[in-house]
Image (tube, rainbow over all chains, first blue to last red; front, side):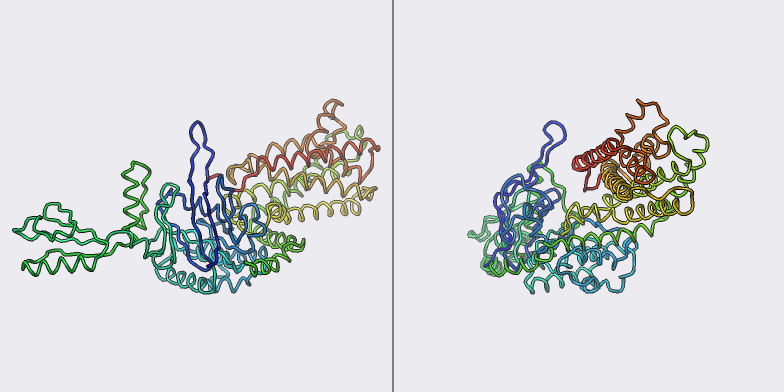
Length: 319
Length: 271
C-alpha cells in the first residue's frame, strides 16, 4: 500500500482577538490517506474540516504536528507540491466578468502540463456554457467550473471541499461518476461533504471530526459495523418485559422495546422464533443496520449533550 | 515513490525555469486586460481621465508665474503630465481592481495554484502599467513633435524616472488595496495619496515656486524623486548632486513600498 498523505499530531490554532480569544480548531489529528482512494472528512459545522483541509493543501502552516503529502511538506515545499495537486475551494473565487472559457484558459496558463481549457470544461459538462460569463452561470455551474479548474493540472491528489453543494440531483450524479472515474485512474481524492449519502456512495475510507478531533474513522462498513444494529417493536399486549428472550438486552419504554445488537441476524432469528413460539404478533417491527447518518447523528447528539457547539448539518441530517 | 520523484522532476523542470513564471504572469495579465476592457469605469480612468487632467493643468498653469521655476508652460505641463498619467492610470485602476479580486476571492483562488504571490501582483498590474507607460511615451513624443518642447536630453534618466514611478505606484496601490475594505471605499482611500502627489510632488505645480523649506519637505514625498528625474531627463536643469538625491529618494520609496506591502496587503476577503 502506498501512502499519499500522512498526518501526525496535526494542530491548528487561530490567534484570538482580545483576551482568551485564541481558538484551537484542529486538536491533534493522526490519519493516513492511501494512494488512489477517496477519503472523506465529515463533521458538523465548526468541527474543523476546512481548517484541516487548508493545512493539507499547504494554504496555512500547522501550529503543530506534521503532514507529508507525496512525501513532501505541503506548506514549506508548496512550489514543488502544487503541480501535483488540484484544489476546489468551498467558495468560488472566479472573476465574475470573465467567461467560463476565459477563466479556464487563465487557469491553464498558470498551470504546468495543463489540460486544454475546452477539455477541462467538457469533463464537467460545461462545453455548452463556455462563452457565458461567470456571473451569469448558475450556482451549480460555477461549482462545476471550479471543479474543472481543480482538474486542469491532471492532479495526483485532488481536494474537493463540498463539491456538490448547490448541484441538482442529475449534476450531482454526474460529478460522482467523474470522481469515481478519476479514482479509477489512480487519483487520490480528499473530500469534505455535508451529504452523508455522498460519503457513503464515494468514500473508500472516511473520518468523522468533532471539535477538532477525529472521533471515528475507517471504511464506511467498519464505521457502521462498530455501531450496534437496532430492532424495535411494540411489546405485545398482555406480556411483561421479563418474558422477552433473556439473551437479548432490551430497553423498554412503555410498550416500545428496543434491542441493540452487534449480530442482527441471530438476534432477529431468536426474537422471531420466540414470537412464533408464544404465538404473538410483533407490531411496528423494525430492524436495521446502523447507517452512516445514524452514526453521524449519534456523534453530533453526544456533542450537543456535552453542551458545546452543536450546529447540526442541516442538509446532511435531512438527506 | 521513486517513480513519483522522477515524474515530479519532469513535471517541475519547465516550471522551475523563468519561462514558466513569465507564462503565468502573461496568462493572468491577459485575463486582467479583458476585465479592464469590460469595465466602463476602468476604461474611463485609464484612457480619458489622464487626458482631461493634463488639459486641466495646462489651463490652471496659465495663472502661475513659472519664470522662477525656469519652465515654460508647455514644459511644466508635459513633464508633470507624465507623472500625472502614471499616477492616475496605475494607482486609480489598480487599487479597485485588487480590492475587487480580493473580495471575489479570486486572489485566494489563485494562491491555491502554482502562481507565486509576487507573480499574481505583477500579472495583475501589467495591463495598467502598460497602458500608463504607453500614454507617457505618447506625451513625450507629442510634446516633442507638436508642442514647442525639446526632445529628451537624457532619455535614460527619463526612463529611469518612469520606471521608479511605476514601481512605487504599483507598490503603493497594493498597500492601499490592503487597507481598503470595499471597492466603493477605494474612492476615499485613494484620495490622500492622489492629493499629496498632485500638489506636493511637482506634478501639478513645479516645486520651485514654493518657499525653500516647503520644497524640501516635498522632496520627501513618494513621487517627487521620480518626477524630478523625469523632468531632468527630458528638459535638464539638475546638477549631479540633485540627480543623485532625486534617485535616492525615489529608491527609498520603493524600499518603503516593499515593506508596507508585506505589512499591510491582505489576500483574504475582508467582508
